[in-house]
Image 1 (cartoon, rainbow, N blue to C red):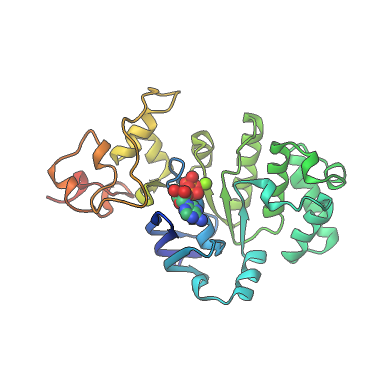
Image 2 (cartoon, rainbow, N blue to C red; image 1 turned 180 degrees about the vertical axis):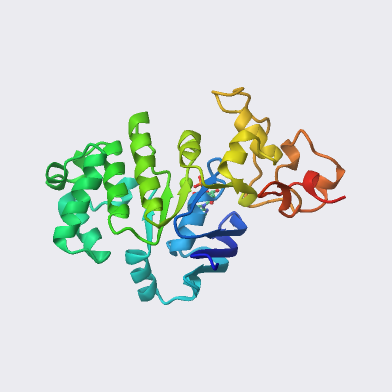
Length: 313
Ligand SMILES: Nc1ncnc2c1ncn2[C@@H]1O[C@H](COP(=O)(O)OP(=O)(O)O)[C@@H](O)[C@H]1O
Ligand SMILES: [Mg+2]
C-alpha cells in the first residue's frame, strides 16, 4: 500500500550570520491512514523544523531538499495557493505555541468557526463538533467563544487550538507538543482525543518530549538527535529497550528511571561531524564511530538503528 504521507530524505538548513544551521538531515518517514508516529528528541534536535517543513511554514532563510509526498503529490513543489488549500483541509497543525495560532483581537468563537468552515464543515455541524471537542476538554463553547485569547490561561489556549485542528478531521494531524502546559488529567484527555482521531482514520504525527504521552499513544516512534533520525520502530519496543545508545541514555536520564543525565553536550548544528553525532558522548563508542556516518540498520524486530553496533561486520 502506498502511504498517505511519504517523506524522503528531507533536509533543512538555515542560512545565518554564523553559517548554515543544519536543523534537519535526511529525514525519511511515512504514515498510513490511522497510524500514529511519535517524534521524540531533546530541545533543538529539529522536531518543530520537521513539522514546519512538511507544512511549508519555514522562514525564507531556510533551504529545503528532499520530498514530501501527500496522496502522491509533492508538497514541496506546489504553488503557495495550492499549499494553503492543503493546509486548510488535509494537513492540520497543532502548533507548539498556541498563542501564536490565535488572533489576539478577535473573539475565539469566530476563529473556531472559521477554522471549521475552512475545513468544509457547515456552521451547524461545526458548532456541534466544536461543542463536543471542547466539552471533552472541560471547556464550554459559548463561554470560550465570547472571550479573547489573552483572557485564557496557557492551558486553555492549548485546548482551543487542539479543538481547532481536530474539528475538520484532516487526513494528517501534526501536533507539536500538544500537551505543553496541561496537567496530567488533561494530558490523558488530549491523548484520548488524538487516539479517537486516529481511530477515525486520520494519520497523526505527534512531536513530544512528554514521554508519558508517548507511551499512552503507542504507534511508532522516531528518535531525533542533532537533526537526524537515529532510531525508528514500534513505540513499545523503544520504551522496553532502545537499540541506539542515545535512546538508552535518554531513558536512563528520566527522573522516574535512573535520573542520570547524559554527560557532554550535543554538537553545534553549524558544525555537525561527518561521523555519528553522538559518538563524542557515547559510552559504547568504538573506533569506527569517529570515522563515518552510520546508516539505519535493522536492530530488532521492526526497529532501525543508526549505530554501527547493529551493522553486519
Ligand atoms: N529560522 C531559523 N534560523 C536559524 N536557526 C533556526 C531557525 N529555526 C530553527 N532554528 C534552529 O534549528 C534547530 C532545531 O530547532 P527546532 O526544530 O525548533 O527544535 P525542537 O526539536 O526543539 O523543536 C535549533 O538549533 C534552532 O535554533
Ligand atoms: Mg519544538
